[in-house]
Image (tube, rainbow, N blue to C red; front, side, top):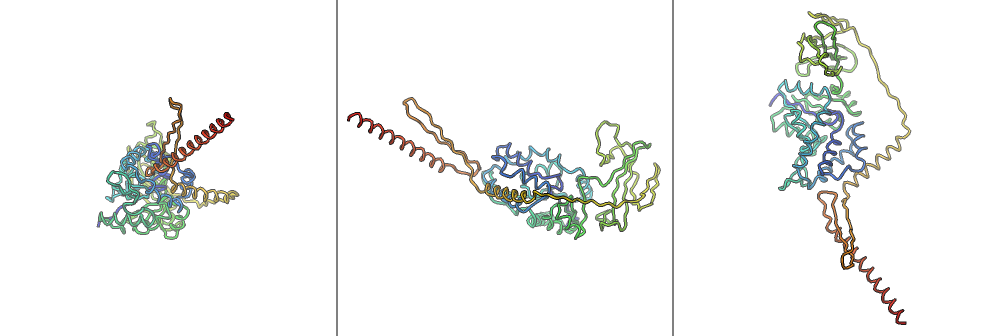
Amino acid sequence: MTQGAAFFDLDRTLLAGASGEIFSEAMQRAGLSSGPFPGEKFLFGLFHRIGETLPAMAIARQGVTVAKGRSAAAVQVAAESVVEQLVGLVQPFAETALKTHRESGRPVVLATTTPYDLVKPFADALGFDDAVATRYAIDANGNYDGTLDGPFVWSAGKLMAIQDWADHHGVDLAESWAYSDSFYDTPMLDAVGHPVVVNPDPRMVLVAATRRWPTVNFDVSPGVIKIPDSDPQLGFRGLFLPTSAIDDIRGPHSVFPDADDPSVFLSAWYGDLGLASGVPQSIYSLSTDEMEQIGLRALVPGQVWEFAQGEIEFTGWTRWSSFQIAFDPGKEAALVASVLAMLALTVSLFTRRRRIWLRARDDEQGSTLVGVAGLSKSEAGDVSEDVRAVQQIAADHIAGRKAAANETTSNDDRKSEQ
């Protein structure tokens, strides 16, 4: 067994939001999808706000059925077209965690429900060692056959998938890390020796507090101080820990949210902060490309760290709380609308969408020629029976009109004879 691996969830963990909307647009541009399904915008908006939901994942399970008949190669090309867009959604401080594991010699693995062919180009671009994702089975013609090749990689299915991956690669999950925001990834987080909750959804906040799992945020810095007016310029990265602890595996971390033993872990740097380069910088990040590290130090309130270029003191901390009180009189209507949208979306997945055209034109002999054509709106559809049915209806209608016209002519002839 190796020392372990690091598994990263994709949506709302590694990325700031969901990848599904981007992949959906890419499939539409490639002609692999007929357009957004009913309620798609609402569904993605709900995911951005509260994370995964059971109805959304139930719909995701039907993706393998919807994909039946599509070219796997065409899907891979569509996925490659949005790699740059997805990389732009990577949360700013996710790379720090990835770099830490790489420097420790641990493989980094993307673990996501998203289909493998869609997510693999992105995983390669970010330098992941592998991707554990939902795989669609492919037939002899290179098209998806409508079945799964392995588990649906979500919740317990994701745990099963990473266990299979770990067994195949000789990785010990007890020595591994897992990062996720989702309550439904609790089985995966519980299976590894070092679970880390990232930007948690509302239910995961409670789970993390109950199990004392560390919580981090990839969208904000632990803390950065820049002092451009000193000579040389100074920069500090800081991490405030309410109840601090440190070990060889997890490094500095907090074991309890209350300030029972507060401390600040600082790394100090001197050199060129790069502020005069003309390139915009984030106030939440410290570029150390042109700087030398002074050292690392843990400070308790009132303690001073003196070094050759100056000194810094941890003067104390201030307790604060954030409360939000809201009254939403339209929540009942929103709930009803949400349920109806989900039902409409579910119905649309099982409804065979198709179009039928009729074209009538006069020929040189004065007859009317009627043409019938059909187009399936799903790749696996067959409209031949529908075309024949409409053709028969048109033929019956024309025959009826001819019979009526002949009867009218006969009546006129009889009147003329009288």
